[in-house]
Length: 432
Figure 1 (cartoon, rainbow, N blue to C red):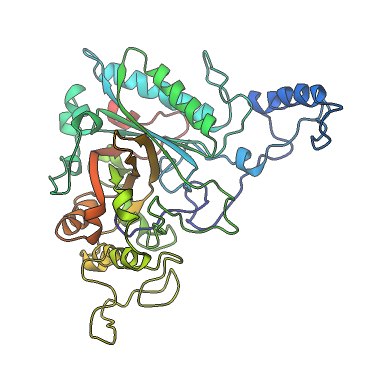
Figure 2 (figure 1 turned 60 degrees about the horizontal axis):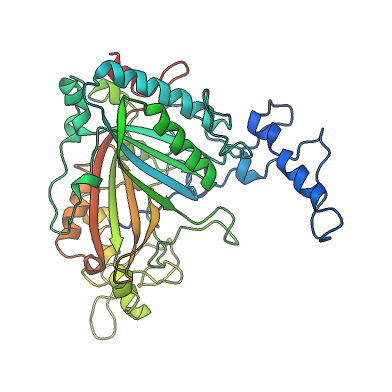
């Protein structure tokens, strides 16, 4: 888990850490969900009349209650980049990979991406699915829903588009820390779903799976979560399940070289990947029983940062530059040579940088009562061979954290630029 920070509460293309609330204007058109959003509440309030005095009266039938900012926040589907890359971390996430069905090819893939794009646009706007909506999210607003689509290495052979496969999509090298389950790795197509409401996120997952129809089948699915917006007194960098502030040094869109590091240039090769990015996905299990046996001091030495504040062990605040040469009274380096934060620094890896945007996961316990929990690591970069790979190779050679984590699944996906109005995601590839 490289020491790259996670974006804070922002909307798409807004710098991490600058919280914005995009609320619909009072004169805007309400979606079907919003219009129906108070129906259930009215019946509940009437039924409770004369009971507990703590229940608020329901609004009049002709005065729909406004959504809270959490429910009303909207991310645009169309744009230069796909949503879900620079969008703020959401409270709930689903990662799911699909394989094209036997006999399905380029034509079927194009029809599927057209359906998926239409559905994603509707759901992200807080509207119901075009057909056979399940009503799971009918009471909710958009809740910062994002849907992001990508193509795996195998997609290009399946669709006869081998000549359009990017060189950057070559399989990742093997790492000594890998214990990969191939059935939960890679895939023809990849979908990332995020939202600040669990039912909104599930609704999108279920709707897209139904939209796949006979064209594709689910290869694997992983479910994750983050801290809910507003759960802390002020916006702050997220913590992972080890209790560490995780993502202090993430590249920020305000930085002059952000686009160069994270996105394929508009004149990039291949042309259909213009303004796109490459997503590396890793299921990283945290060996929490072993980790939690360490003292706080030992944990801080593994990371190279204070657990309470995220500040470097060399002093200051979370954002203070780390002094890698500082020694203690005995002449020992304050930040150990194998500390995670030291190893993952861009200036220790030829400038390699990636935008980390993970979700935590907890999938129960094994037969020995050990938690199956950790990080759904997702990182974005213009070229994984210059972003993820050099950092992971260095971690592989001597990261103190490697004793307490295990990489169990992996994937690499080409995520094209955003769809313009009237386009679907991937259209320039599939119809070019």
